[in-house]
Image (cartoon, rainbow, N blue to C red; front, side):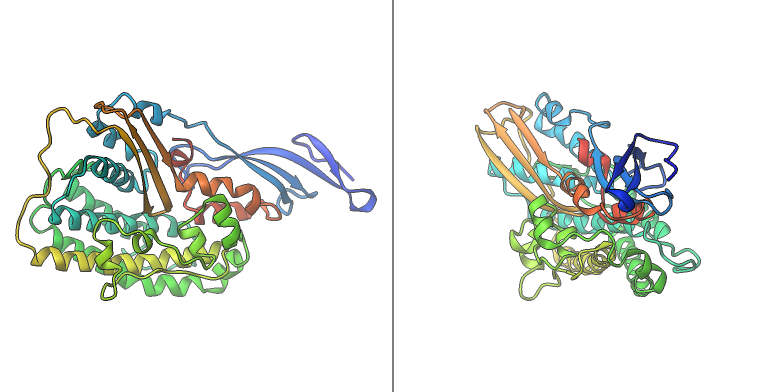
Length: 394
């Protein structure tokens, strides 16, 4: 049997069962959702033809984008930390700001104005839709799914432009402050949001039809399976575990912001789950969650329109010192559970601020998920896991 021409060569098996294998380092390029920093995998292949070879082992090589942000937190004022907290997952940067703001406010005992709470919730769900559209756009959908100007990329661009019109930032909104928001939303923005989410709602039936088309089902059903027990063991909670049937959602189970109302008996909130835990199930959950987020955005708009004008922040001292102690806050970020441990010694900077990121948990599961698959399966599997390299390396 001729040996491969690249990579170290080893033989797996005995006699007729032997196969030549090669070890390669695979770098996923700029067309992948993990752009702005490549995800590198050390892949051990089994097979004569690289196109048909199966993955024996796969190990993510992390740390190449590491910026040491948790150490940088320790030398920055609590207000300045928010400017760093939204940069590790650039597809859901608002969620990074929100988690730390909630943690610091809990330690200070701050009560955020009601209008700020509902605006924060509105932005959380609006940016969740942006995140989900980003990864749904990498599904192997049939051509002509969304004609004219309604492709998933263009829908996402429309929402990102709406976010920019309200906050001035497309990728890093920097709209949150300790104690509320930097300012109320501009006049006319609520009407713009309604139009934007209505466009997404109109596209969802076609998207969901496409996800059950033969092309998509063939490419994704049974691919990249991560069952609920294994997902929980790796801490891959959120989209990934819900795709395997585990109905956990911190917005409902440990509510924060206005989610106690939205996920209450009369609220529109609901937990979207699937059964198979594979690549297709994860995209099904993302599409279903877009519909839920649209309902939540609409409910927030209704509440805010009925609310009398009022403050959106709490006045704080020039030097903000957090009382000594520690606090852990966990939020339902768009990609999954995100956690922030804040330890204070009474200074204006944290003594320690550690993050638990959903991408790191998902990447940790790759050695379990990828063996047995072909190289061609990597793109849909990894795209469905909502990985962002900055969220892995931090």
